[in-house]
Length: 408
Image 1: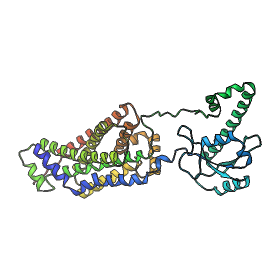
Image 2: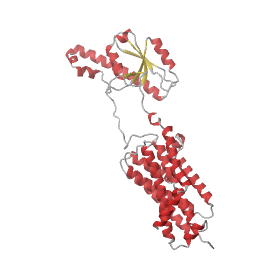
Image 3: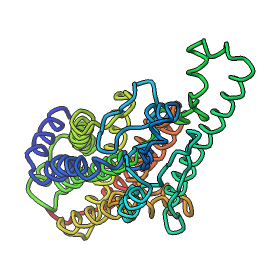
Image 4: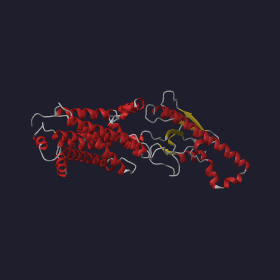
């Protein structure tokens, strides 16, 4: 059986079709994903609010408001934070000499991805007056930014009134620099936490779906291995049929070699994603490789089942496998945002369909490893894959046992 394992493995490695579909194609597609989804994870990040500040005599005569804007803003033409690292950038400011110029700049930004939300003038008392753009036709994010701009200026006005009142009541408090700094410090009103093991990233879902597709393409080795065992398809199968090695040992050694080659291809693809594409798998490399091994076992069983189907030519079996893999990858969300939404819809409305989809189960296995601190979700998905593998192996054995040949 050891010799069978070795020679079958060598023959599969030399098969260009298996190497291309199970190894080269997933790596090439991973490289394409690296460029396609380079900026996808940053799309949902909050950007500084663009605002115009009228730099007139009142603004220059209001040191408190000027310091407030300097501490919370960066110049619109600069990509670096103007204030210290400890200050939070809220605004991206542009200076204008007059209100008319500010309105012109705001109108000129219409249609941009990040339009100017409004402009701010300073009254004679050194307090800001906000002029917010019309948001009737803007997106929800623009409306939120306009509200944040108004809230920030209202906060400054209220803090200024509080400071003036305290100055009249107890002027000695202003001799403490820490107290003065705390008056105009904007505290975080919310704490950013993560309810998952790692921060969610939109792009990694496509790589997980690709791992599911790559694992299923490894079934091609199972198809080829099973076809070479059939005595009516070639002299190699005929010699094995009449050899001293039992059918069970020959079949076991051949399928183990098929599983080893499939797992090696998937492990190399995983390593490429991990170290070249930079996909973070939460440092769980060993559990990920275990998931890859189980996925490859299921793919091998799928290939063995297709290879054992009687009355079908070899080319038809390969075509059926390719169509099946592409169909499963569709409902795993591999082909872009519309298919990812379709996969989520199917998962929510028909969970049984996702349960029976091996590509979806493989994708979810890697997903659970990255985002859950418990291994329970992973074990559930691996259990489904193992059940699929056992069922397909049983059907393959039943199909092979029922085949009879009049002559070889």
